[in-house]
Length: 176
Image (tube, rainbow, N blue to C red; front, side, top):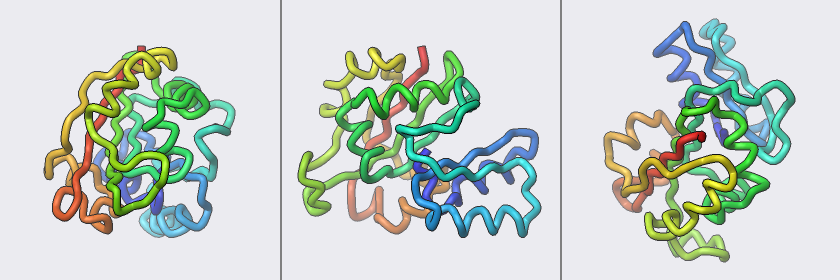
């Protein structure tokens, strides 16, 4: 969810051709490049869909063994950080029972998002009851390691300088 240019989705599809990798993002412009790459490389195990988390397409309930959200922005970021039901319930709905929702976040004061100065483990841990209300339990919450950032396959992580010039937080939620 919040797939951006879809590079992490393409990487996932190439690493396991037997799995379907789905890229969901609210921006058609963001997904355009990734979908073209998938077509050129004949990646038949990818799906690119333009949608906001608050308006998931029908048929995606309990489809995912793993949901990843790498460096969200806008309403997706706010919904995760504030544990807003309008975001957390659809995010949980994507995941099969027992599946993980892995989130990488990086918000610092210099980003001037206005509603929160920074995102850290303490802030996210305070949302445990609200996440649980949406059907997700915190399985882990820690400062993201460089290896996690690399393994994410996120081109946005590189652009942000996450792990180098700015902090990043890893939040893993488990679908109850």
